Length: 394
Image (cartoon, rainbow, N blue to C red; front, side):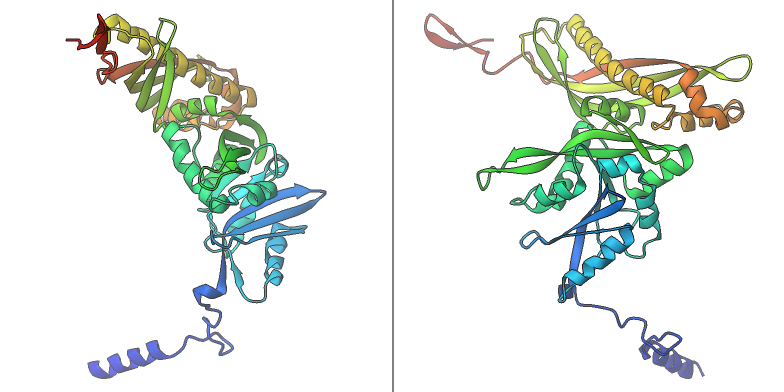
């Protein structure tokens, strides 16, 4: 009996799967060489129409397709008629670029399409193109060095090393808008560059900080310098080289290695939030000095730490003031205050953006330099000429 059951199961597995009309469910399967794999999709808006631009994965034979229509869905679907040999496949799309004008009109339409489309994924990384169109960036950037997809892959790693931005995916941004009414997205720019391998020049992609959204509409850009303040307030600071005044007319380079932030609030007698304080701890290592300072003197270390504290406080304060101005908690401070004060915060949570705008804010930064790597003892300066002869100094 058991043997008969096994035979029946094997027969069922070997039978081609069929739909209700007897048609095999997988008759649309194609070989990989029959697919045009799309890596990057760009979206622009003009005269009531959507311009879609698609770039393939193939770095040796990059294909760029463009089409305009009333909806993004049709603009992408009609691209299939551009080729008779390959099927345009969006299932492996890594990057979605939205031009500045389209972002100002609202990205909710794009996010809604991504969420509903059976072809694209919410894990697709989202970039906002500043000062130009996504079509132009995809068409011009990296023509000789792997195309737009390769440039974005490198950029994502670079911005994390210097905490100049953070690359969110479409799902992240959609969630922030739905839950907080505002969101952040990585901003990028098209800039002229030099091709070191092949000579000549070609356009490239550089980080441009953050794009700020309120109610799914682009309302402001945050430049790279202040974007670091966003990362401090959101606990996304992964590293940076801070160049601070050394007090002697030069600069010291401090490699930041760690940061954390803790928020606290003071409530008024009527239950509202009167003040919000952000306590930020930053740690780093001293890597370079322009002037010969005594790194073993505690006063020197304290002076450098104070300079670092002032720099990071300035950047974080700018971001806090911007959130108050826009009445947009894009750093999601309210969520952390809610966890710390669940009962009191629940009474004002519905009016949180206005509470944030009216509250006093304070940023306090504590910086600590952990290692100096003998930065004050240069092997070059250790050799000094005395009486015309080089002598090693003790």
